[in-house]
Image (cartoon, rainbow, N blue to C red; front, side, top):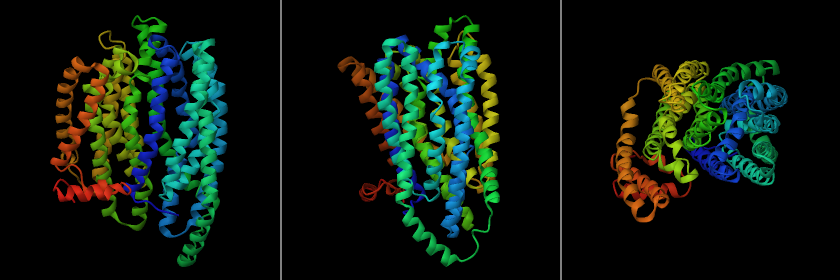
Length: 541
């Protein structure tokens, strides 16, 4: 089995996740138009988005953090030279996940009437929630396979399965929405949510085929390694392995529940508090649509990269911990946080600077501009939270990020409740509450990391990206208005984004923010680019 380095594995996952998110962006942008655009599109997308607040919770409960536990334990077994033990971990985990997935799917179906009638007070959301329930079972099985390949630090099957899953999902969505929209937005939204079920099933089939195809290579390597290492790496009983999986998985699961709970808080509290402050039901649901469907998709784009880094970090840090290489752990932690800042800072600045133009360009919804501006900083804090949590989890401290994120979520809950009902803020209050919640979690994670891996400079991690992003923002604000008068707003925004990216990259090179290792992780072309930039004296070692 091919084993990827931490940075190369992260890059492979980035490519797969980016391709998947591009397909996801397509449906996020196209579905509102298929549903009628404008307020009708926002309402239909809200019906589509509301069930996902519960679906995300059911999904976490069905996986119980087991995929990350599988990835960590498989990585540890591989570092000791025993792939037979790694396979036992996988077999146990897939049976656990099948059972939990089945229970969670049934529970999601059972609670649908309660949430539709009592929480959202909108019966139009019922069909979407029922259509989404079967997806939990298939995603649970899929996550076990992904954990297995992550533990072996072979990220290609994971990345490819994301593309397969999203492609089937999008095709299902477009087909069913086109057919069902004539019968009503509630049925069109249900057709869109059913795409999650068909996509997950396709992902399971792909990963299962990849697993069984690699079975022979794993068997040969396992026999050779176990023969060389001799010693009873298989001494742990099934019960002991289950205990190890759950001890690691449960804190991660609770931590994983916090993010879906934040979405649930928004889905439950934001419309409710808006109604209390004087909004009509449809107007409150539409305002929530500006937050969930017209703003959050842009926050989730940079999360593609930070998620890939985090997934790759857990088994890599765990492997270094098993070998007792503390220096490597610190290097990986600093590298992960630095790359997260290189992505998160320009993303947050760019979304803020173009907060009015972006939703107008895509959906002709300028009302969503202030909402996007209010949550722009989440793009940075979410990236840092994911990466710092991954390092702590890989070091065997999964409870720490759980506690830290829980503290941030409690603060967010209180702020969302009070700020959303302030007439001058409205739904923007929920955006600012989310920013503060993630910022608190990041600060607490950084403090914990400093204690575990040794002190590191926060300014040293961020200053190059901050300087480059400042030049980028200035360039965008100059270019977009000028071009808008000459060639129209749509082309001006797209061109401005390109100019901003170019300015950011050039300034980042000039201030030494890009290193040779960052480029060399890119297969084939990366080393060539690094060589050229070295000759131009624009690249640090």
